[in-house]
Length: 143
Image (cartoon, rainbow, N blue to C red; front, side):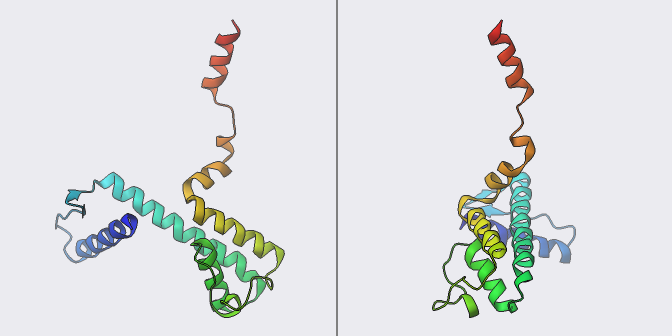
């Protein structure tokens, strides 16, 4: 809810800024001004969210279902909202999708349920490398 409110306020301010380039306007939430770093982080999150949704949609589209089926399957899985429309509607299932699409949609469910950034960070190789600080601490502990 907070993300939606801040995103809508940021969008409104961006449109005002296009019309009136010299205007100075701030985004407020619960009477407090939201600083620019928070707004940038929110914009990055929203951009990541929609880019991942588009990428997942493109991967699921390889199964040659219609647009409505693919889009609603991705939205339903990514947002964890249950059934979609068309071939993944309330009286249908995801059984017609290929195993690859089912894996992609399962990954979308994890992204939507567990938040984007922790899952994406977990997939980065740098998250799994031993840090040099830990190595130095271990060397000092051995001495």
